[in-house]
Amino acid sequence: MTYQVLLGKTAKNDLQHLEAVWQRRVAKQLLTLTTDPRPSGVTKLRGVENEWRIRVGAYRIIYEIDDEKRTVTVLRLRHRREVYR
Image 1 (cartoon, rainbow, N blue to C red):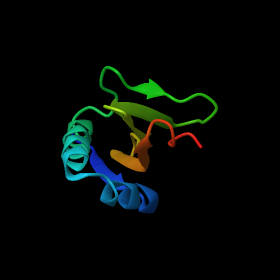
Image 2: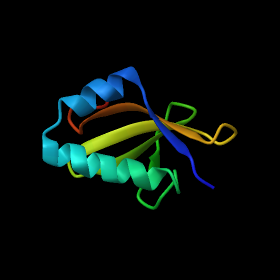
Image 3: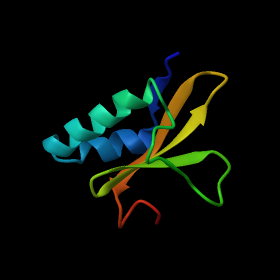
Image 4: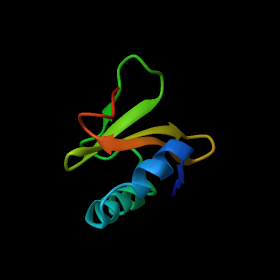
């Protein structure tokens, strides 16, 4: 079963500000989330109910999973030193 990946407003803005090489790497990772939103290497964030983190080099993708609607909503996409601020 596949999931639909949605980009929130902040995530869209974050993606546009990445260099092209990082945009491609992030896009590739987002495609893998359509088939498995909880791949190996993903971490559930503490202190929030339904947020997950996956690493793409020095960047972090923060997202929510809705199993009922079969959607993955990307909330933030930033460099590791900025993403948790």
